[in-house]
Image (tube, rainbow, N blue to C red; front, side, top):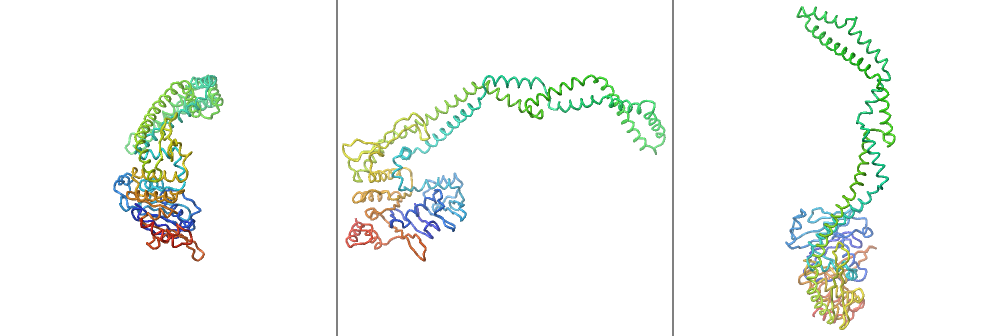
Length: 543
C-alpha cells in the first residue's frame, strides 16, 4: 500500500507531504485546485514521461513510501535490489531536465521503475473509460484474469523471432539482384581473374625484374669488372691468403689473422654472388618481352576493375564470388529460410492457441461475476458477454479478436460496448472490471481518477459501496466530486489552491470529522452551504 507521498517543486506544488492509510481514501477539491497535478506527479514517479512545462527552475523530487508484501521479494533478488517491506521509490528531475530514479536508494532505469511499480500500484486515469472499448485493452483484462503473464511473454518472444526471420527473408530477397546476364558477366570476370593466377607480390617482383633487364648491359659490365678485380689478375684474394700465412707464425698477430680470415670469407662470397649474377643475366637476357607482357596483363586487369592493388583485386574477386554463390545457391537458401519461417510460425500458432484456450477457460466465470457486480450497481437486467473469435492473422496479442458486449436493459440483445454503453454505464462497467481484475493480479493499491464520471444519486452510492468493498482487500484512493462516494471512505483528503504573495500553491489536507461534513455538504450544494446540505452530509456519513 501507498503509505507516504512527498512532492517538491512540481507544477503548482512547492512542498507536499501526505500520509495514506489502508482502506478507502477519497480526494476532493474544486476544479483546478490541483487534484490532477498530484495524480500526474504520482504517474511520473511510476515511470511516466516528463512534460517539461510542469517543471520550474528548481530541482523536482517526487518520493513515495510503499508497504509491500514479501511475495514480490523475488523481483528484488532478480534485479539486484535491496528488499524492504517499507520500500521507497524516488524520482529526481534536475534544472537541466535530466532525471534519475531510485528504488530503496539504488539507482535504476526508468523502465525498471515502471516495471516494478506496475506490480504494486495501478492508476485508472479518466480517459481509460474510453480505452476499455479497445480490443487490446479488453484482451489485457482477460489475460490478467487468466494469469497469462508467462504465456504472453512466451508468445511475444516467439512473435519477435518470427518477425525477425521475415525481415531476414526480405533482406535475402533484396540481395538477389542478379539476372542471368549479370551472372554470366560476373562469372566471366571471376574466371578471368582466377585464370590469370596472380600472386600477391607478383607486381612488385615483375617491376624489379623488368628494371633489371632494361639496364642489363650496365649491370653486366659492373658485375664482370667487379668479379675480375676480385678473382683475376689483381690477385686480391691470393695476396690476403699470403698475408694470413705470414701472420700465423706468431701469436701476437692472432687477432689480425682472424680479421683477415673473416674478410677473406666475405670476399669469396661476394665473388661467388657476382658470378651468379653474371650467369643469370646471360640466361634471362631474352625474358624481357615475356615479363613485360605479364606486367601488362596484370595492369590491364587492375585497370579494368578500377582497383589499384592486387589486394583490392582479390577483395573485388571475393565480392563477385559471393554474388555468384548467392545466385547459384539462391533456391537452396530460399528453401532454408522458408523452412525456418514454417517452423517459427508453427511454434507461434501453438503459443497463440495456448493463449486462446486459457482465455476461453475463464470467460464463463468472468461473465457471471461481472453480471453480479453490475446487478449490485443498480443494473439488474444487465448482460455482459465476451466474444472471442479466431483472427486470420497472428499478432503480438495472439490470434484472438475480442469484443466486450453489453446490454443494460431486459430484452435488448447484447452489442459491442462501444456502440451501446453510455458514460454512466461505462463507468459502472469499468469499476466492476477493475474490482475483479484487482482480485486476480495482486495489485495492492488502486487509484481512481473520477471513475464515477456520468453517474449520480443512488447509482453513485452503489459505486461507493463497491469501492468500499474493494478497499477491504486493496488500498483504494479515489478522486471524486460525488458526495455519495466521498461519504463511504475511511479517510477524506481535500486539495486546495492557495495564493500567497502572488504565488499559487497546491496543498492537501486530511479532514477531521467536522471539516468532512462541510466538504460533503459543499459537494452536495455547491459554494453556498445550506443547513439542509449539512444535515444531508451527516446522514450520508452515518450510513
